[in-house]
Length: 325
Image 1 (cartoon, rainbow, N blue to C red):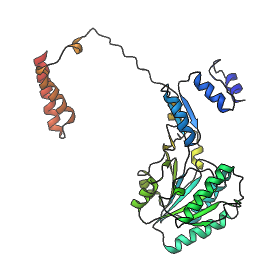
Image 2 (image 1 turned 90 degrees about the vertical axis):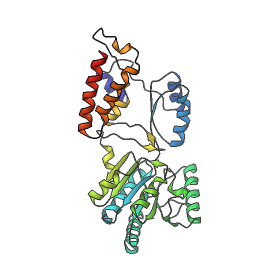
Image 3 (image 1 turned 120 degrees about the horizontal axis):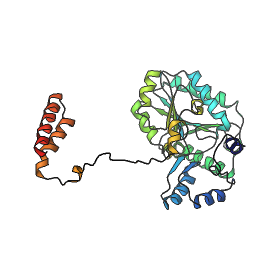
Image 4 (image 1 turned 45 degrees about the horizontal axis):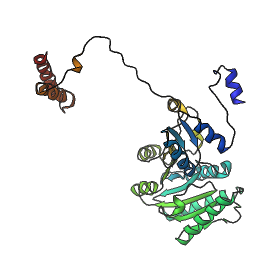
C-alpha cells in the first residue's frame, strides 16, 4: 500500500522495490548490490550483517538493541517517575528497544528508595503478562538467577511472567544490567553520586536512549555528560516518535540515524566537483627554503593566542609573499 501510494504521488519507476519478508529475500537484495543498508534489529544480527557488508565495504546505518537507563535525581517527582516507568513497561509489553530497563536512583534516602519500590511494585502488579519465546524466556531465567545469586532481590515470578519483573539491589557489573533483552524486566541500581552514576551507565555496552527525571537545569547539565543517542528530560519514549527528530544509538546500540533532516542526509552520498576558473598554475610550483618564512607567518596569523601576534603574523606573511612574487 505504501509503495502504491508514493508511486501514484510521482515516484519514478524502478526507484522503489518491495522485497519478500524472509531473511533470504533480504540477503538476495544485498547480494544483487546496494549502495547502503538501513537495519533495525538486534545487536547480534547486526554483527552478522556487518561482516557480510564488509566484503563489499557497503555502509550501514544500524538501530539496534537497548538496555535503556532512567535516571532518578533527588529532585525528581516520584509520582511522575512511577507513572512513566509503568507506561514504558506497558507499551508493547515492554518488548521494545527503548523500553526502560535500568532505573538508576541517585543519592536516595532509605525512605525515598522504599517509596519508589513500593509504588512501582503496585503499578507493575496492575499490568498483564506477555507471552515470550522459549529462547527469550531462557535468557531471562539465566539473568535473574545470576542476579539473585550475586545478591540482587527479585520481585515477581519468572516462570509465569504474570507481571513485569522488578529486580532491586542490582550492581552495574552484573550481567542483568548489561543485557539487551526484549522482555518485561526492570532493574534498580542505587548510585550514591553523579560520578558513580556516569560510571554505572558506562558499564553497560548499550546506549540507545536515556531518560533523566528531576530539576530541568540539573538534568540538562547531566545530559551533556551521558553517552546515548537520545536523552529525554522528564519524559519517556514518547518524544522519540516525532518524525522531525533524528533517532539512532551509540556503542552497541548502533550507529547513524534515521528520521529528521539528518536521517534524510544519511540516504545521500556526497560528490564534490571543483572547477578552476583561471589559468593560474603557481600552486603546482615546488616549494623550498624560501617559502619557510611565508608558512611560519601564516601559521602565526591564524593560530597565535593574542590578536597583536596574529596581526604581526599577517604583516610577516605579506612581506614574505612580496619577496616570492
